[in-house]
Image 1: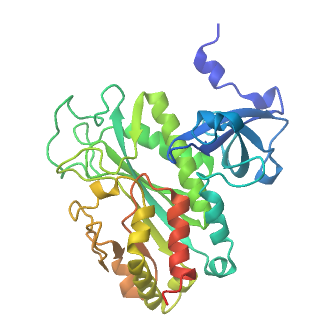
Image 2: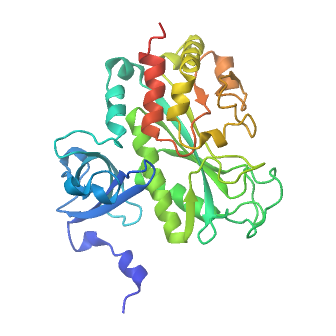
Image 3: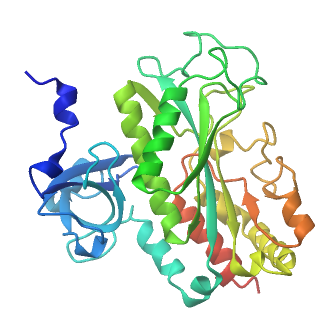
Length: 357
C-alpha cells in the first residue's frame, strides 16, 4: 500500500494533462485566507483564461444566507509549491453576481488607483517587510518560549543563530524556498527582535503586484505552518510588555524619486504623508495602537515624525538615499496585519494624486 506522502507527491504530468488550480481569496475578517481547488483541462498561464468561480459567502461572513453566492475573479497566477508540476495557485478577488466588488474586496479599489495614468507613469515600487510570530498550537504561546514563562530579555535573538535563540527556522526556510518556487519576488528573511518572531521581505514589486505577492506569501506561510502543527500570528503586539511588536514596514519609491533630484521629491511626498497621518493610521491595521507606543523602534501613534536612519520615526529615510540624493523611503507605521492592497494604493494616492491644497 502506498504511503500517504507518496500519494501527495504524485507527479500528474506523466498520466494526465489536467492540472489543479487552488483559488485563494480573503475572507470576511479581512485577514482570514480561504481557498478551494478545481481541476482544469490543461496548463494555464494567464488569469484572464481562467474561469470565474463562486463560493458560499454566508460561510465566510461575506454574504447573507438568503443571497449567499459570491463570485471569484482570478487576478494573478503562481506556481503551486505544494502540488508542484503544472499546478497553480490563483489569487482572486470577490464580487456580487451583478459584478460589484463586495465590501471586503480591497483589491478592486487599489487596482483603480494603480491604473491611473499619473500613477502608472511613476512606476511605484514597493518592498514590504512582513513580520509574524510563530505560536505553539495548543497554548498560543510563542514557539521556543517556556510554557507560561518567558525567555531571556531581547538582544541575542535578532538575526540570531543557535537552538536557544532561533525557534522555527525550518518553517521559515521552507517558506522562503516555497515562495521562490511560486514566483514570488521574496527578497530575504531574518529572525526578529522578539524570540519566535520572524520576517520575510517581498519586493521590489510594482503597483498591484505587491499586494498579490504578499497575500500569496502569507497563504503559503499558513499552509506550511499547518503542516508543521504551528500557528502563525500577524497580531501587531502578540505579547504585552517589554517585547517588540510586529509590523509590515513598507518601502516605497517612484520613478521621480529614483532619478536625479529625487530627494526633494521624497521630502515633498513625506510632507504629504504627514498631513494625512490620521487617515493612514486608520487604514494601517487593527490593534496598531498596542504597537505604536514610541518604544520598541516605533513612533507614537499620535505623532508623525520622519528622519534619516531613525527607526523610532514614522517614516525613515536611508543614509544611502540622503547621500545619493535619490532613492526611497520606509513607512514604518503599517502593522503586521495590514492589507497590502490598502497600504500600497494609499501611499501612491497620497504621494502622487492627492493635492494638499
